[in-house]
Image 1 (cartoon, rainbow, N blue to C red):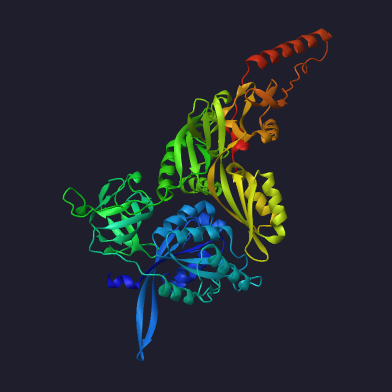
Image 2: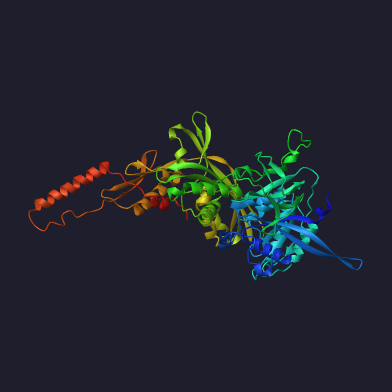
Length: 617
């Protein structure tokens, strides 16, 4: 053990969304004088404008703080200088992968709970992730300054949760107001006293875990690392154990919270390494960096990679198409760069007759999809067409083959299918007791299966349901917030694939199938969704000189239809007199032309029509 490691503490803040993580981080920065007062602003560690506008943290953000503690002994005051490496994390379920990456790089976590709302669904989920890593947990109750704060009730909930669910004893729960700075110093003192210092030998070969990264057009890929063994200096040759990529270190440093160059990073420290690599696929989140000098045939050390991260499994799929065909390469480059610091995004090339070339993308949830689309628009200036979200289905054919699809285009003919299985999720809802009835009624409408009910306190209940994932992402969350006046929260995790009675709903315009409008739906809801789509199409498709039939069908059986009537042109308006037979001739000629157009005419659907039907706002 090195002496300098005794004065290092690596920790993060975890909580449900909007419980005050960013505000608490602001107070830490002020108390430790990490950021000068004239430069300080709210949500300082939230670096994106999008984070400030929505009031949520999207990306994890590390920062290094220096905290001095005065120790009094033998009538003398000794100042101990501690290095506190904080990682601020998101709170929304869609960004739980950011949380899991942060937890791998630290030894402790502050569990922040809002006194006005108590324990929420994501509080439980993040706590479970932290305990899986055997981290030291410091429970903190925030917003005690508010008049509706339930301080005693929240404290009882936390103690009951730790003792009943995790069999842990809580000594003290710190009560703070991050807004006014109440008891903030006490939190940092507890961090120093309770969170263990890092361990590692700087004389061993370098082992640094990449927990995040970003791309700089001049410096190449910049890896955010936690050094577990060894040390690294500027000019060292390094190797990525996972990809085998080799490079020379251009720059190393710490987060202050901006990049601050340093001479050396040693075991136990958190910082960044500029790799000079221009190929972003060579520096992966979860990979291990080691010194090249220790790697090779004559290597006397058996260097094994650090345990990385479980691959994130996308749950929601949607296709991104550039509104302008000329932006395709720009979109491809933008997705590559986004994937560098958001490893949970997956994408593959696809093309559509209606929308051109684009990418089928996978996301962890609807908010993740929305944020990614907004970042592409703001950071890279790309206007997008986004198809309606879908989930992954498992198909078993009659000849015994099993495969997965995430698009209706990939679905085989029903005669070849033995069964279709859709993903189900286990959903945990925390709600005030007074909204329990409305919440359960809404869940039954979305095909959810009730499993369990338990009480967090006298006034709050935890409801456990199993629900098809497509129902969860297609409106249940909004409905839950509506019926509970915003007080209920939910967390979910993918459970398994189950056999379901599903069909492919096809849309036909002028007798021609439009693949971009097809969707997989439950058989019992097929008619209602078909009626909704054809009515919407009738409203937005402009009329032509011939009537346009719009149909919805299942395996060529039409279940809904609307017709856009032909435009009426007054062909006899220029005739002011004469025999009526002259008018009759023109009307008969017009009628024959319409019949001919009805047989041979084709309608070209503009991208705007697809956007209005498919895009999720």
